[in-house]
Length: 369
Ligand code: M6R
Image (cartoon, rainbow, N blue to C red; front, side):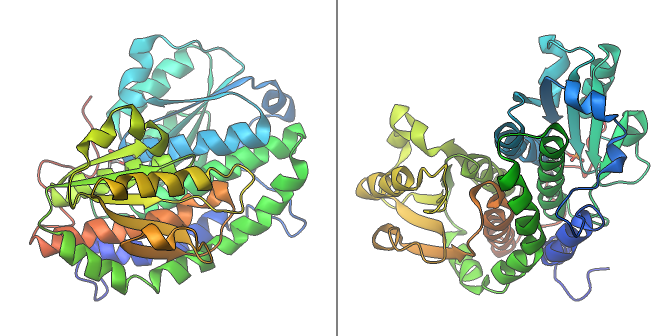
């Protein structure tokens, strides 16, 4: 039931703090260690992993792109992210020391299932990150880490996505813990930061009224661009996908640094451009460069919609619309920066009079290749 919400999607957006908390539940010990017995790999097998593939479709693929940044940084294991529909046709290099992480909310996506079968035939170890208990993908995998998002009814994935991202962090931090790496202190600190996430998502949700208002003013646009860097890049892709599937508006996500290599030619007077700004405090910060990107698109006429951390004053002069999110370590920021993009897409679609929960041409699980 929709519990008083107009759409399942709105209900599921609102459930995200609980979904994230439930996904962390029992997996973070009081001593700061991670407990992931579900991985069902021996310590030796975990230490022997020399390559990780994350394989998924659509929104789950975007979660995989975020996973790459976190897992590589924390563990120093190389990570490749692949669209499931491309994976096996590329004849990827797989063996016993390869970990293939398949990410699927429904656990029934045929492309992902075929990729997992291929990986297992090649003797790779397959870990499923999945939301649907007992579905086909976890049943056929060597191990499964369930995201405890609860049932997701709306075709557009929201809480499914956020919990997939969190599960990927858990896998990365756990691998780092077992293998003992350079960034051990940072990984220990991340455990506390993970615990703080549900509260931060609640904070974002409490400030969404201006985003809804903004969305109503964007409902007649025919194109929107999304820019991000580092983990903000997959968030940009996710924001664009949500808008395409719900509002049937042309939308594209770009790595902000690529703009000058061609796409900036798209910017015209009034083109709405959503920019996801990384934290000014982060060690991996590309903050200054993204602020310059905002200036560049604005100088060419863009209407800028800026998502930035509380306290980031550098963006203020260049933001036509400013959406604030709580301070969050860079790698974890997608959990907060994605939420306004979900609300934006949902509200634009509703304003256009569309069926938010059942967009045209789409099914909740895609069981054909
Ligand atoms: O159930 P899955 O996570 O395997 O689904 C993968 C995609 O089909 C799915 O994320 C799709 O992109 C969503 N409709 C996006 O909102």
